[in-house]
Picture (spheres, helix red, strand yellow):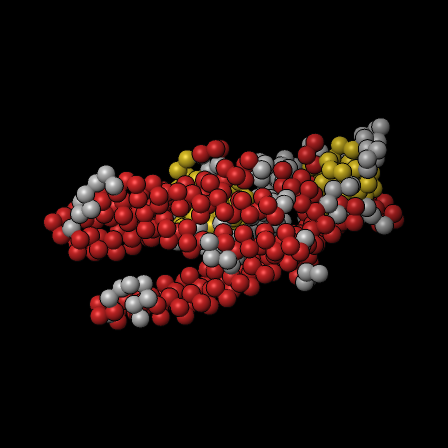
Length: 427
């Protein structure tokens, strides 16, 4: 599956990201805000233990993975005790190898999403292996329903290919041996990963494929998201009710005589966790789709504050007086030729007591302008957010196409508009 940066669409066996949008920090603060007037470089995404960078994309193992690996080791070890009792306690080493190999298969599944995303020039923030699978955080939306379909389908396809490879491997080993049991387990687990992710509901890959089909038919990506998200919610309820029921009635081919009270509780807990993950992922998909419908409303021209130019030695009190007279809400420091050199930080102004303002020059409160802090007034939507994310700051100088000063864009204003867009229903 695919998860955009900023919102995870989680499914129990695989999660790959669709286009997440950069979200300004809450409360008017930006976690990547500049210190001492210099913008910091964006921090690299974390998420656990860094394992490598295939195709330049960081792969992390989340702490929750170790819990799941231990659980798989314990459960599979119990099964090995019935199939290969001669292994003794060594069965847990074999089980640990199986857990690692299974998650290596999940990584291949995620890398399939990643390769296709990079082929379509969709940036991938990271891959994370975690509780119940993995997630590929892809930072942009597919441009066409066809690309969306292929990007979603390639993950389950690779899982099916892996299942076939393990099946062929079984032809060359004895069924009752450790290699035979491992290959059989990996074949079955990859078939389950593929089958589960092909279910037609968000946030699963099958849900993204359904979204692409509805998008193609209606011409509206939002219609596809709504349809696939509601199917995902129905799927979540079906898992909550159906998984324990099928286990109790032998629907999976299991022997119902061996079911204990602990097995019943475990099945119910697993079903509840899967239901919660799918339901939440479907809701997040709707939330992000609603945001994308309103993203074009985020325009630099409408969000920018009017600014007055002042020279570096101008006292803060005088600069504020000029701004009030002009009805402006921002200050830009200019040189003797009127060229912009810095932006006075709003937070710095608020930190100066009123009785001190006549003796404080605006230059001491200003942030020197870098090229990344000068943006076009014509920016809007995702392009605007991507530009701000590329050069984190608290204020930006907004320029007309002619190079003239239009005003100052505050990150806090973008944040408020962002939150307001999230709150409005989609058309």
